[in-house]
Length: 250
Image (cartoon, rainbow, N blue to C red; front, side, top):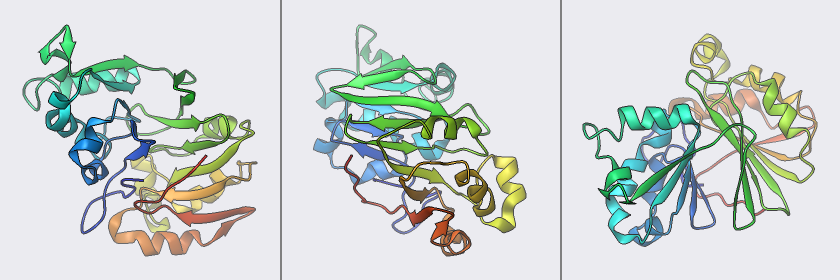
């Protein structure tokens, strides 16, 4: 876990997970913890949605190590999210279009559109986009090694479709789910399509599995408040807070 905070400050870093040494799930400020050699080994980046805290290091990653690579880095996202990146980030105004550098036939970056429910298999690792509900089009990801699975909800709100997926995964070991706001900001959670502890409790009541549950994307100034409201258990589920540099094997 390179970063798992809902903001920055001190040692806080926004969302990015490194799978093995060649796949990123989101590209928040946590990517900056990697050195140049580690960055150059990343061949695939899966983006949940186009908000800045999840994409901000993608342009810098390409600029830093694109020249060190022998082939293009592949960015996977829904077509809507890819269109946002093309229009608003890699547009020669905010940042160069690395899908055309050094030229269109030999780019440093390539886009690959994915759909909810579609499996991408990379050397026996299966990555599947799963439904999320947010203020912009968004997905979560289901990572499956064959031996075990991890679900990352992405930024999401009340989402029955997530549990339809999670409840049918036999080898699910870890569930990483966001809770950005405290209960006192439930209205803000509704407006921004995030969870708060009371909504999280309602959501986890729909979860029938026994996976370990980890909370991510907490707002930096409310970490203790949010985790205090969550407590250590909702029903049958023990709750843990995700932390930077935490490692999961599955």
